[in-house]
Image (cartoon, rainbow, N blue to C red; front, side, top):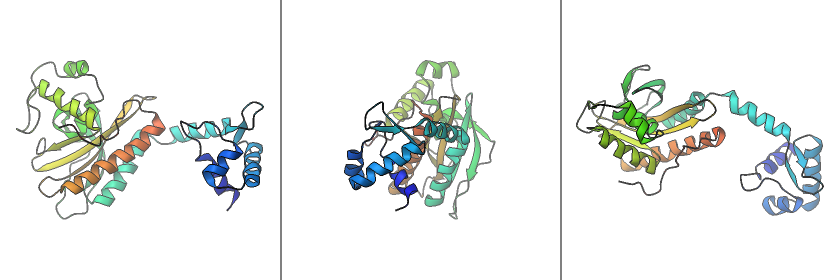
Length: 258
C-alpha cells in the first residue's frame, strides 16, 4: 500500500464524532500494525497533514487540511454540485433531471439532462413555472417558515390544475409534509401528465438554495422507480449539505408522512 493511500485511510477515520486519533485507533479501525501506524502518523505530522494535540500522542487534522477544505468548499458553486448529482441520477434512471432555483414565487430551471427513454419529459431552461404548483418549488418553499410563505402569497393563488394546491392553507399543509419527508412530489400539476420528485439543498454562506429534480411521465413511473429516485437524490443532496453545512437540509424520512 502506498503512503498516499494509507494517509487517505487515516483521514477517513476523522468524523464529527472523532476529532483526533491515536496509534491504537489506527490499529483498531484500519487493522494496521502498531509500528506502521506510529510511523505513518509521524510522517503525516512532518508533512503538515496532521498536528499533535498538545503534549499528548493524539493527532488531529492540521491547518493545511483546513485550508484545503476551504478551497474545495468554494471551488464549485451550489449549482455545479447539484448538477453533478442530477446528471448522475438522470443517467442511472433514464428520466430527465433538472436543477432549479426560486425567483420570488416562480421557479426557473438552470440546467437540464434530458432522459434517454422514448417517452420523456423536456422543459425549456429558463422557463418560469409557479413555485407552489411544482415539486421543485415546494422543495424550496419548504425551507421557509410559514409566515414568510404567507407573505409571498398574501392573496388567493390560482391553481393550474385540480391536483395542485388550491389555496394557501393547503399549500402550507403540503409544505409540512415536504419538511417531514425530506422531498417533494408533484403529479399532473403545472404540466399535465408529468410527475416529478425534488430535493432541496442550500448554502448558508451564500444564501443560495437549489432544487434537484427528476421528472418523468407520471403514467409510466413505477413505485420502485420512484423510491430509487427519492433515495438517489437525497443521498446526493446530503453529500452537498455536508460540505455546505446546510442546517435546513432534511434527510429522507424512512416512513413518509401522508
